[in-house]
Length: 445
Image (tube, rainbow, N blue to C red; front, top):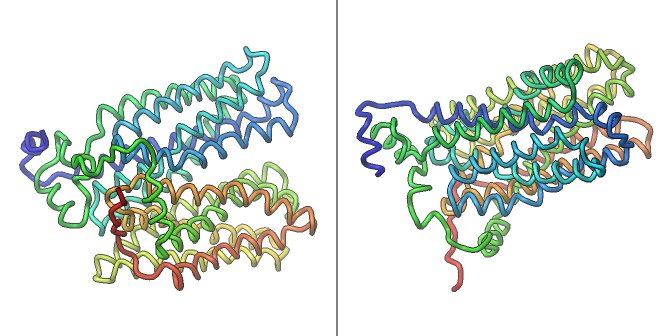
């Protein structure tokens, strides 16, 4: 079958970039889908009669499910392959998103909303590990930095593209249609996925030249075609998980990615409140100002990946090519502490924009995962990485809230967030060591 598919094209194609475009589009919709409740939240709470505590529980449902489902999601990817699991996930989360538009028909609306958000989080768990897995198969090592950066900036693109649209729907139509529209968009994309996504060896429009180019550059083109790579176990192999957690290199990468995500969640959760409460801006001003770091993060995310691949193509080692933008980016990220020593809003905006730009430059965790994950369990390895990473989404808002309660000031909070950037630097300098693909040891019978 693979040979027949490859015979369709006889010149070097660029099918991998079309695959990357699909990943970017679906990932953007994925991040927009996560933000639906944040945008519609005030109207949802008003119409359903939910108090802040109830809304807090509903907001938390996604994060807990998303974190808990990382290992099962990664195992499913390695067991059944990226096409089936990813496409099914898109359709399933879209159905649960669509259903949220009808929770007002239930007497226990709050409980129903919690359950649906929980299921959305569970269904979306394989997305980022799958993206990393597909990039490992479709791209040579020297192009992975840019490819991973492209799908990773979808989190910023979603804010810029979808948030204004969803806000308009909430204000001018009804909050129910935010969920209905996003559910329909996701379902259509799920069908498109099954029609257009293939492994490199099975793609009907890829040429032999492109496949050989990817393979020669370190791409795992056989990943979903080699039966040995599709594990038949009944669940995640904990022996393999133990090997991942026994690797000093991977532990350093996990720690660093946790800290990078902690920085991200400061901007997603507390940054607008900081601008209003800490800097005295109006809500309208804060809304515009909060968008600037997202734009800068998007630009930084692309440049970080491009710069990493540039270094690799110039002959630098994989370790140097990946670590350099990460370290430089995290150094820029610490610039946010300048805000503790100025009264100028212009300086605050500039420092925060530089910090989020640096965060984008240094956010190469998924690129490094594609470089280091054992070829037999790329999905499971990504699941472990994302499990640790998403703990930062849970702890950061809580830690910052605790600091504010104890001190009444954001100064300590900014020091905490910037400190995460320093931990990333120290981790890559002194823990990670040489970046290379981990080779698994056979499991005992």
